[in-house]
Length: 265
Image (tube, rainbow, N blue to C red; front, side):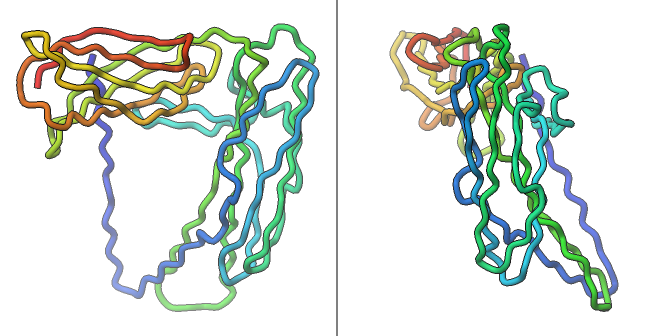
């Protein structure tokens, strides 16, 4: 199965007047972009997001919540809260929703997750709290074009319902990328279960005499139920030829998924 190539098309714009670029990327998150917890139906738990203004001017920050979904092809969506099947957005209360930070000032956005009393809950539920530095309005009139770049962060709030939920992973695409100096095998996998998985992908390849040519690994990444990711294996030192390959996605000691295939380089 072929994996579609993702191409980025850049637009080069020319202006006869002066262009001033001002990057408004001074807001930073200090304690990570993932908050993962285990809960039971009817339980509550709390957390916080630490925000800092690392710039030299006061900044206003907007905080809001969205659902989050993505695919290995590069598609991603930040939908209205509560629209995804496994959204926990409606379980979450957070404060403040708007704050102003002076230069080098820090603040905390507190959140509380109220897991519903519902025995049918199982597996993983998630959403994202968006932290966005608002672009200040210009009060001075200046010649030329001024471009502001606003940065926003998506902080993942992940709720695992105890140890429940089916774990299942499928290989949905393989593609050899030989356009670079080093060959890379891109592997698309989809989480078809009910629980978030963090597969570590490894592949062992064998020549036509059965001799192992090495084991190649990709960085471990997480995938939520119904989402897919692209994992890349750098085939360092593998010469052109025909090989037999064993591909293994190790999610944990009890959940290992694999497949065999022929690899032509």
